Length: 316
Ligand code: GH3
Ligand code: MG
Ligand code: MG
Ligand code: MG
Image 1: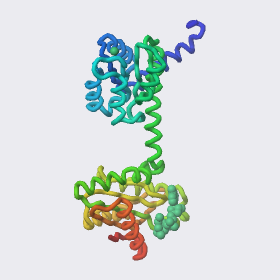
Image 2 (image 1 turned 90 degrees about the vertical axis):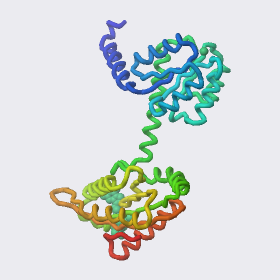
Image 3 (image 1 turned 135 degrees about the vertical axis):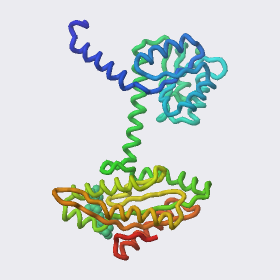
Image 4 (image 1 turned 135 degrees about the horizontal axis):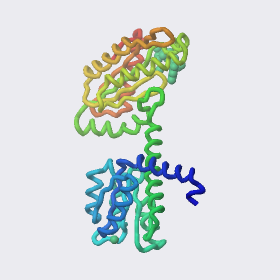
């Protein structure tokens, strides 16, 4: 059989190697009170490239996930353990880690439909009954890890603007509540900078849409270089960008706005044998204890005032 299908066999081996490569560094926590059972699972998972963590009971498992949170992607969880059983552990884990962040596969020696249903209801993504084939373990672990990865990608794509690589408005909306709350709690003002490129429609008409795109990318890079890591920077729409940040009063926000305005004015973007340039009108606002919506509205009004006053300027 193997000889007859030799090319496929080679392909299978290669696929296996690629898989092991892909699994490198993906953390799997094995929770089982039996040392032997743990050692067996760890041996297999390590062979497939996974980085293994172990816990002999529920409390240790909770600690391990808390400590290595970002590295552990999947938990293999035995049901029958003294102290905390698997079902309880799964419920406890699910209070903090949703299924799209942390995968859980329930494992039990006593195959029963009721138990698998109970573990799934408690929050497991999947279920394995002992004894299982190595192949089934491998397929289920890989499948669950892949699904989580797909979800992460989908989430990150949903909040990313493909032209500039910046986050989009949706990302800001997701963070807005938390930002305002942090501002109130730490008594820091919430500031917004609204940046709108000037006469961009005319620039597009003159240099073409691709030239316009190149300018948008250069402006986005400038913004990325100018804001701090903790600031929220998004492409809010066509040729409009928002920066939302904590801890800047009106003067601080105006200074940030001016750094952005002058930086954009100095950009030179080579396109079709020509150096393209653009300017921006910038509105800034800073509020104590306000909402993101309110501070953006104020900054947007200021941006329109900057347009009215002749463009390429900052208004606060
Ligand atoms: P103002 O100074 O008043 O802001 O004038 P404006 O022309 O910049 O403003 P308007 O809102 O009338 O036009 C915005 C233009 O931005 C229209 C659209 O063609 C262009 N635009 C929006 N998104 C993109 C994009 O992804 N790529 C390119 N090249 N142009 C875009
Ligand atoms: Mg057990
Ligand atoms: Mg514009
Ligand atoms: Mg606009």
